[in-house]
Amino acid sequence: MTTATDLLDDLDLPCVDGRVDWDSLTSDELFDVVRNIYRLLDSREPDRPTDGVLQRSLQLEETWRTATALQHRYAGLLQDAYNSADLRTTIGLPKGKTPFRDGNDLIAKTHGIRAYEASGRTKIAAAMTPARDSDPNRDENISVGQTLLPLLGALQSQGRVHPTKLASAVNMIDDIDQAAEVAGKDQGYRDQLRSVIEKDLVEKIQHTTPEEFSRYVGRRKKDLLAALDPVDKQFTKRQTDAMHNVWCEGPVRGNPNAFKWSIITDAEGNETFSTIEAMANNPRAKDDDTFDSRTRGQRSMHAFRDALKFALANLEHSELRGANGAHTQMVIIGDYPTLIQGLRTEMADVLPEIQAEKREKLLALLAEGKSAEADADTLLEPNTSQPTSSVLLNDATVKLPAPKTDNPDEILQDENLNRLQSRISQGIYTPYIPPNVLLRLLCDVSVSPVTLTGNRQVLSIGRKQRQFSESLRRAILARDRGCAVPGCHWPAAWCELHHIKYWSQNGKTSTENGVMICAHHHQALHAKMLQIERVNGEIRFKLHPMIDPAQETRKNYFWQN
Image (cartoon, rainbow, N blue to C red; front, side, top):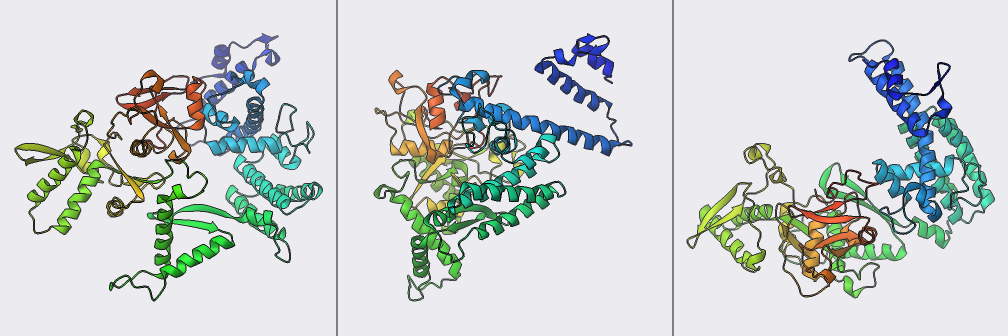
């Protein structure tokens, strides 16, 4: 077991008259001491509960919270350094293009934390730590050395409150301040309101659990927003515009085929939605003699969905923001084995009188005919690592890939986890689309169907042009789904296509030589802040050494799941 003497000997600390000269230690040496002290505490703790284990755990929690105050200060300083061109050198970055999108991205990528955690740290730093003259975005109403939220800031500096509760408080105060500004309140009123809210929250924040405090903040926020509304309900345009919103609340009761959306629309939108809802439920409308068993709500949902799909198919005729991009479209993705299995099932239902062996030959004939449409040089070899089914067709053996499975026993022999994906049919934003819906969508003119192999590869045909054709763009969009750079979460609709081997260097315009990346990483790539290469046919990236000191080639697992 490590002892305190061993700890001091390993660190080789400077001593004066038998005492450690702490003032002469550098920051690096002090952090070494802290890390070694944690290791010492860990080595002393028995492998089973002993007297005082609760107290020791609470002391560790209190120590960690004390450290979060310094953590928030660092977040503010890093934000200042990134946002000030003259201070960039303090963090080893150039004045121009950097590997990071902004200060929050710098903190998230270098510290290995989530983007919302980095954003939370910088928000707390801005509101609860003393204002710095190095901050180019400092609130002009706060003098250097002053704190925007002094009461909460005092608790934060002492490490007496969990950071999640501090983040809840800051977000609530920010939202109310924005609402007061939109309501036309002057700065004096807003400062006084902020002070009153802060005092109220300080009384509650220390003696509630994070769940209790979050619920309290939500109720208080709702009451305050209502209090800022005009008594006569004559809202200003700014107040009205601030209310309009659309958000997805996620799956209903965990059902991956039932999503709840909430919409707050204007009068024009309300009239539009009401018109579609009335049209869908018109009792005089009869398309055929089939009895419609759907409820009123179901008919309305289907009408809204189909109207939006029609709009997506006709975006080029609109002035909708973002509609001028060729990648603003609905794309449904399905892998080849799952598609084949879906067709097997469909054929069995439609042609039950035909023997299974003959149906399999018919399916093979369809597959062979589809493959013949492509250039022979570009066809992908079948993945022999997973079992396939073979049928004899015109004296030739045609192999069909095995279907996906949700039974792990079936993949134990071939040891290929790629088959363990029974729900591979998906969209860019929707992780699961039922196979029967997938097959129906393949016939929809407003949907771009793309079929991928097990390695997410698509058929590629070189083009004698620089711009990517619509078919190639759809194929790359389906393969990458979003920015292909590891750690980036931007969807394909916000991204650009990049030639891996530059067009000026005789690079082809093809799926093999194309990749989807966002504007930030596109610029970083050209600024040599990022490297791209192919490893075993897959597109991989080497991130900047500040993000990945090991300099290993990596892929984006956020999109490439």
